[in-house]
Image (cartoon, rainbow, N blue to C red; front, top):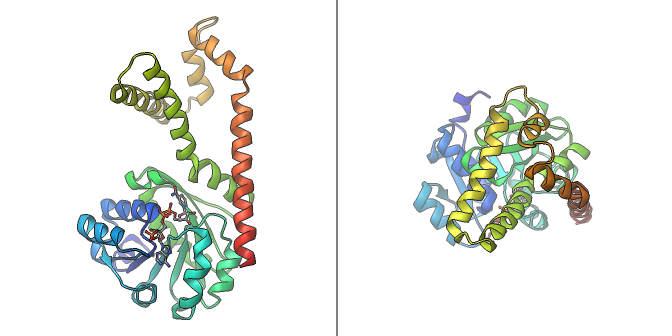
Length: 280
Ligand SMILES: NC(=O)c1ccc[n+]([C@@H]2O[C@H](COP(=O)([O-])OP(=O)(O)OC[C@H]3O[C@@H](n4cnc5c(N)ncnc54)[C@H](OP(=O)(O)O)[C@@H]3O)[C@@H](O)[C@H]2O)c1
């Protein structure tokens, strides 16, 4: 399915929380999907009302109605809610629909078990920068869904960088480092800001300084072409200088080990959710 065909598809979101809203905004901003073709449901009405008022997305009363109406259904509820959401409406799905789940740790096998008649099943793992079209989005397709690869990719492209993957270790690694990644980066930004405030900067300017430092480093790396991140770091560090002293302490305190440990813990949680949802 090319971009022209995507424009004609009705796309529905079950669950209008943070991630669905980020994707909806990206799709609208990109112009790839006309807002009139975007539909959403939610458990409580507040978010739907806001989506309708601010972005013009049509709210639908029930999940079943949304499935009846849409060509592509995006599952934007929490993994632990997904079985409860799908079971009562499973028979409404039909063979030619595309179903994309955003749920971390909810396997393709579990989706297929719930919706055996649907061929075009995929999992996508975006992150919240989707809202400004700067996401990293991984996706994987269920067995037999290969023919839908182009459609899934076309839909996800407006969000940012799209990475096709097999389900398994690499999908887990992307989930943790990129899906959860902004959460880890924000944690560091908070420490940065706090430290500046402790040294006399007022909150707002401290926040701006942190943002610009992270943004500047990321933009520099992004625009550096073939120059490696290691080389960019070397350019900041002069022998026995200020940065070198700070970096030495970071290494002595094993920041890398702490980060790796955090990633591994997050992977374990992802696997626990997979086991929990598979057992439901
Ligand atoms: N946030 C991220 O950075 C991120 C990144 C990658 C993947 N994901 C995945 O995206 C999914 C959604 O995460 P989120 O952060 O967007 O969570 P969220 O903000 O809590 O959104 C979930 C939404 O689902 C709604 N919901 C619950 N039960 C429903 C039902 N029966 N029918 C319709 N809507 C229902 C909730 O309604 P209420 O308003 O009533 O609570 C809520 O608005 C999760 O599976 C998560 O793993 C999230």
